[in-house]
Length: 400
Image 1 (cartoon, rainbow, N blue to C red):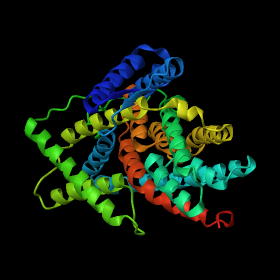
Image 2 (cartoon, rainbow, N blue to C red):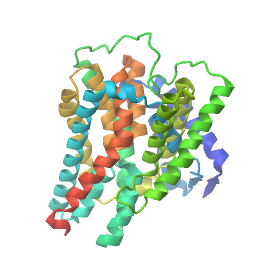
Image 3 (cartoon, one colour):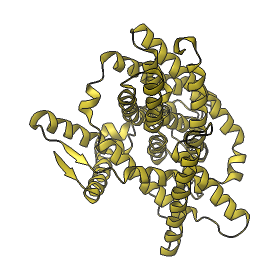
């Protein structure tokens, strides 16, 4: 066992990102199917560690103490860059996309429970391999896994939840690019959309140079730190109440209140370019850490029936994105980018959705609508709606 401390892990994550960039730009497969750079680099490192573990018994233990703060910082930047006036302008698209998302949540749980019963498994296993972990991610999976163990006596619920969420994170990053590429080619603008002269939205073009000063950067870091501190306090206060929310949702919500509140009173206007740079750095490092630290040998220990459920869920997500998300959202280029984002958080997490969309827009051109809608739905509305859908399914007689 080799242990890497915090700084060594940070160095490893940056090397993974550089490796991913090299792979995406030099390997035709990754370039053709627009696989996000952190996914390409992180998966290759995870596979290399699997080979080391199986052939020589070596294992590298990463210090993940920066992983959660980086994820929270990313969500804080989404909140700080969320202009409520812009969200109102995109209200109809936002509402339609939310309906599409709810449809997927209902379908994922129906598939999970149906397949679990067909394979002779506990129906709770089906819920864990449904929207709890696939749309909810690791945080939601851990919370519900603990509840299933305490209330329903499902002893291995947390382990199953973590395995399913990890599987989803990988597949969400892998299928988004191919699905979107197929849709773009069959959309009304098969060559994408031409570059425009507007300043890109927060996460739309991570490689675009943004002129910022050291003072503005310090102010932006202070705002992010406030969001993390207050968001954690709010999350702790809500714990155990009917309004309980994951910490990252509280952090995002504080960001929205802070940026729009300061602008409303005319005291301070958030410098979006600086916030977006910090958000993209946090996003890339978080994804690199999440994927390079995957213990693929633990995923391999998933029972075959469990893998069967997850395989069907992956196929269902791809088909849903093509035949429902794309069509409901207008069958155009923006709809194709939205479908890539939906694959990201429908199987993995909001950071994966953003990375999927960045890979598409980097190649085919901008999509302001997608980058306005997906971060807010995937990071804020999704968890609230998902909790309601899960509670609805738990009211079924089989869970009584």
